[in-house]
Length: 87
Image (cartoon, rainbow, N blue to C red):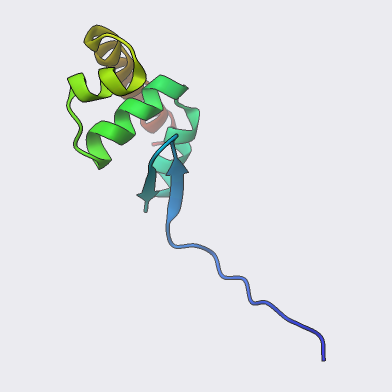
C-alpha cells in the first residue's frame, strides 16, 4: 500500500522574525508584510502582535528610537500604498 498525505490549504499565514512568529489571517495583509523591509516588518510585528514599546524595539534591534519611529512610518506608508493599489 502506498503512503498518501492529504494537503489542506492553510487558513492562516505565518510571518517569522528572528525570535518571533506572527499569524496573519488576511492574505492581503500577508502580501503587504512580505513587501516590507527587515526593520519595517520587525517594528510592525513587535509593536502590533507583541505589544512592544518603541524603546523595547530599539533595544532589541540595537538602533535609536528615532530609527524605530522612521521604520514604522515607512511601513505604514508601504501598507497604505499597497492597499490603495489593490482596492
